[in-house]
Image 1 (cartoon, rainbow, N blue to C red):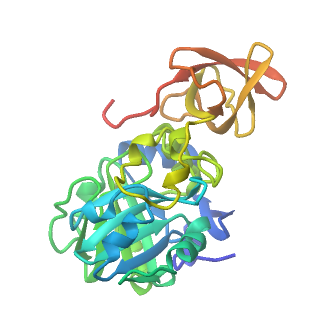
Image 2 (tube, rainbow, N blue to C red):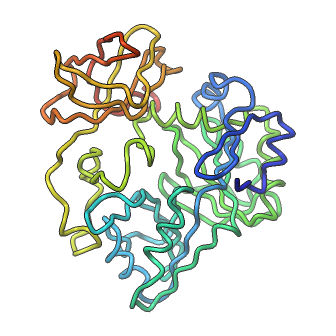
Length: 350
């Protein structure tokens, strides 16, 4: 399996590892619950260097991305970002992405680890006046997330981080050149830090040594993103699913023709949130029922650490289901009642 530059540091911290998209990644360092709660109440530090960094630069970089992605990259202001998607010709999702505009003629696309190669293969051949470069092997990525992340990071940056949500800036952490983005996958305020590989260990150690910071693995990252109602590629998103089916129709805002746009169609399934009582979580693959009729399947499910209730996301073929309605989930042969619930389950400050 692939290993990030920080793999040895995680081993020293006692991490347990798991295969994630072909990468040997820390799943936890101790308690999943403690790591989850650290991000909700203080700050957590994640190694997300398995993610892909693809740079598009040149006079027609914006126009090229407009021809490929579901929203208009050319409209992004310098220093800002957009959540986006790359579709296949059938309008299924190749990957969900974040697009940063670093300069007038330079963009950074961050892709999921398992899809990075597919995204690069799709983007690299074109007739536009721009260059597409996969620099994933050169970059590391560290996420500092939680209500105290702003306080922690500003102790170590050359200048105070002054950016708002979905923005990015150049800065330094101690003497290390970095890009700092105010983005994340936890539902909390926080930052994603991009650095060259040779700076990653120093930056990680600087941040993890803060008394407010807890190192966190993929288990906490998954429970945090699910509470925040954020889809995961391979669970809620895939090449057979269109954006509207995942509840993301509003993200499709490109006014022109783009890859897959001609095959966008009315949804045949609907992503819903579910919340139950008790302590039994509905896991991925469990079936949904109304009476004797099977109507869908769980895509992600946990016992929520923050809400202390089972929560899940699921696809259903019953397109008229709305929050407040009840359905049943088959949990290992036992039917358990769940309430259709608006996403997200958790909002910062609520």
